Length: 156
Length: 208
Image (cartoon, rainbow over all chains, first blue to last red):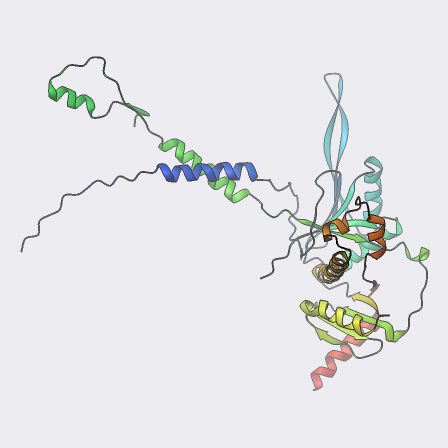
């Protein structure tokens, strides 16, 4: 039996709705996106149920990495002379610290910006001993109020 | 491929018909493929790089330095000790009882139940320096949740929302501050004694 060969039909799909949706999503992501602040060291944060949002300005960051090294970083306004004019320019200061020196580094940052919030960002795998040491030296220097950074806990 | 094609099949038709129309309207067709390609590329880029959950912060208030603190003597039977050993196992005991292991998830119920049983209870948290920092955050988070649920109940009783209760600029803020509950706990350094206690617990269980 002979089968009549069907003529091949060219398929044409109207892609307009798809492109519409794609643009819609594009605009949504472009407007809502917030880029992660640059990090020199990657830190996996622990989770909590806290609702307080992190301040994004005037922050002194203390970062504790997985291998228990401590870094203090903050932004200061530095006056730079450009073409004979004094211009203030934000500069990020990045210092490595130990549990013994962390508080004095924070204090020197505080002098430059007394309003700054103290934020401790520690890796969840870092040891409690490091944190204990940091808290102890801070306590001795009267730095008793600070915030620790956590991610949102996901309950099922 | 041309970016823009001018004209469709209409001129052909016109030619067939033999009617000459010199001022013919042309349908413009623009090839949108490259634009859509770029749009998708950007879409994928933004979808991948976007961060939806910005990190949260937890407030910590340390007590003043030790030499400025008042020394208080507390009866041993009023001390609930939470220990976290170097393998991140949690133990609790009251006074000189033998510590019992428990899971972090049940810490909240444990603290609430024990505090209901003894109103004078003080909680002491002892964490091994080799334990993970996560354990400390877990303990503090559970305590924070207890405070929040308790304060929510107080707020409800006073006829305000928990948000208003926490608002320091609220006109009744002073009144709220008085009623605000904060869980009484202290953190103590891990000592050799704690290691011995935990070892005793573990060896006791091993012989069973």
